[in-house]
Length: 129
Image (cartoon, rainbow, N blue to C red; front, side, top):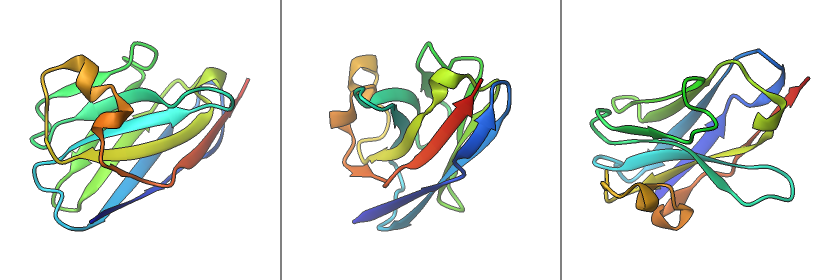
């Protein structure tokens, strides 16, 4: 079993930056693809970004591309999301997720929350204008 714990959320103003972390424990997550999703009040959980085990492959939602950067430290078993130029519409609970199948070429697959077996409890990000 893999446990995921997010941290780093909080209050920010438009234009600010935040860095989210996701600590992984339990079974080894070697070979796992990882991703960030977010869910705003009254909305479906949506894909934000994904990264392969090797870190050579990444994918971003259009809404965050060029503003957010996903990375991982496999030695420290931690996933990160650097969020720059934050906007009020980035307000949401952010979740990290793990997929033991590593990188799948299908963009539809890796952007589908059903593809991920393990989830954290989420961390709130609130951006004011």
